Length: 327
Image 1 (cartoon, helix red, strand yellow):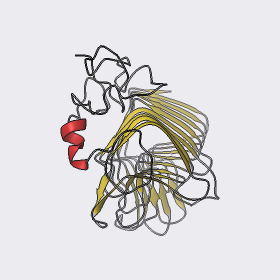
Image 2 (spheres, rainbow, N blue to C red):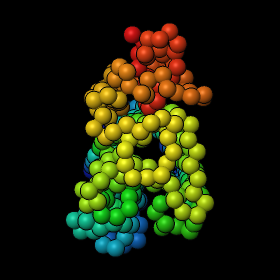
Image 3 (spheres, rainbow, N blue to C red):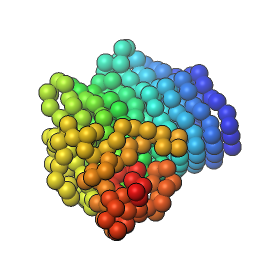
């Protein structure tokens, strides 16, 4: 059990820059910064932590950790790589890297924040990392992995613009034998991503009461949104707001223009009294009081849901990670 510590400048050639866990790991208010796995061939996994047992993180901070494959290897999980059971609560991940190639210009990189092959549950968190030209973005869920994300904000994730990539990849990497990973996104806000799609699904994706907004791809000269493709791919949606962009994901509401995301839908990002920053819906936003059955009981900050954010006398939960307070 680790509490109120800083783990920094760890270095390993293959797995777990700061920690390789095969047992039970509990970390509360721990900062993981500038830890790396760095190698040339094979797989390098888990810049800060590689978990093969049970790992529970709360109120922790992951910053500038990296998985770096300098040769022909794969860089998987800039901050976290999970093959076991991983639980993360009230934590922030920012500026973590998954890079391949000598200068980060290779495509064999995925999951700058988390690469998951096991069971991972993330709630009340902030995400957003960088994979250079890698084909996976902040989160990658592969093979038979189960990834549950609730009340989280994913912002400014960067993924490769020249290849098919995404801020969230579900079964999209193809590194391991074919599987059907399960991805559940509940009250997620994904905004201001760059390069690739918001979501690339080739497994089973279940999305509820969420905002998934497109990012601009300079090489393609267009906005890339949410897509589901390939044999066995399935996407189930209840309460999803999308913005204009390429993709085939169904939404429950009329799409908004990308220019309107931060003028009509969301306020600028802010801390709002919690560690992970979030976007509050604007007054009159289509995200306000638009939630459907099965809303979470609280938002990313721990504030109660639902609230009457539009002042019509009826409280319904909002889409996304932040519940607009009753006025």
